[in-house]
Every structure is written in C-alpha cells, then in structure tokens.
Image (cartoon, rainbow, N blue to C red; front, top):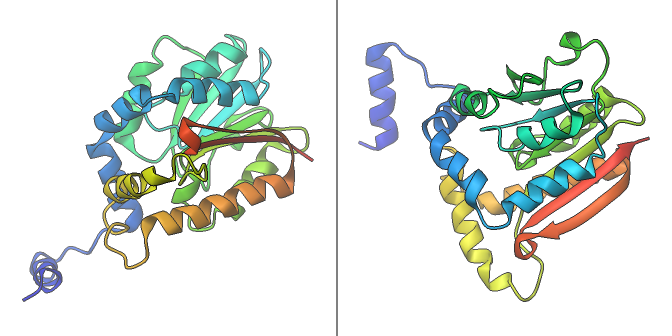
Length: 243
C-alpha cells in the first residue's frame, strides 16, 4: 500500500476531506513563522534591500501604502517611518501565524493595520477612504498561479500615478555567482509548501516563470522608475508609477 492509498483510506474512515492548497500553505507558514522571521531579518543584505524597496516607492508623509503578503512584518516599520504618523500602512497576509509575529513587531506603530486576507483579492479598498498610494510585494510574486493578473489588479487598485514595487528572489544571472544557483534551487525546494516540493517540474523553474510574468506585468502597466539587483544578483527590486 502506498502512502497516498493509506492517507486516502484514513480520510475515508475519518470522513474528513483533503485540505485545499491554500489551507496547507497557511498551516505551513504558520508552523515555520519564527524561522521565516529569522531569515527575513538576518539574511545577508536583506536590510539594505528592504530600505531600497521602501525608498523606491517614493512615499511621502501622510500617504497610504499596502504591503501584499506582508509575512512577519519585516518591511512594515520601514514603510511606517516614511509615511509618518499621519499616514497609514496596511499589511495583508493569509497566514495567521506570521500575522501574529507581525502584530508583535508593529505594536509601537499605531499607523500600521494588519488584515488577514488573500493578496490576490485584498479587501482593502472598502476599508480605505481613498485608493492607496502605493503597493509593495516582497518575495511573494512567485506564489501566484497567475502573477500577471494579480499585479495588474494591484495597478488598478492604486490607479494612475500610484506606485508599485516588487522585490523577488531568483537564480542569479551574474556569471561570478552562478555556481551558487544549485544551492539556491535547493533552498527553494526546501522552503516551498508541501505539494510544490514533490511535483515533477522544478520548483525553481516554476518560480522563474512566475517572476518573469510578474515583472513584465509591472513593466506593461507602469513607467519603471527603479530597477536594481542585490545579494550577488539573487534579489531584484523593480518599481514603477502606474500610467
């Protein structure tokens, strides 16, 4: 009997149904929230990337910025300091565990508001008096089945003149550091939620395709104002103004 057959029989006996991919992912990120937070804060060069992303949005005091897939909230203090106490920061994530960490991290920032929701369908517009001025997404573009549609919906959310910024990790194209790509591919496989690790296609190839689609969508909707690479070429920051 295979493990899959055993699980199927167990479900039949218990009367339960297999969990949805979204529920599996939420449970996974909740379980590993502390580890992800440590990586988010201590990975080499990540602080400078977060600073640059916040700067790339060109936020002014009093503005409103939404972070889609805010995770444990590592970016939120950077954003809150730029919009000031008269501005607003909204963090959106679907995992309750990471939001608990984010809530603790931002308890001294009354202008930060956390929302448990799917970043592909963020319920933020009804909660705001006006459309947000900017949207930031860090290390989440590769999680979407249709990233181009998601990024386009964010452009619609902020409207013309609004700003978008994507920060993502992908294999480096810098010839000096390409020998490290196998280690990156291993990291992608290990940190992927259950299900994506065992698929026949490479998780890294899927990640790369999704990131290309996401960044092309940003370029198609925006006038690109910022485009840099960091961390030996593995981290990309791209921002633009919606036209």
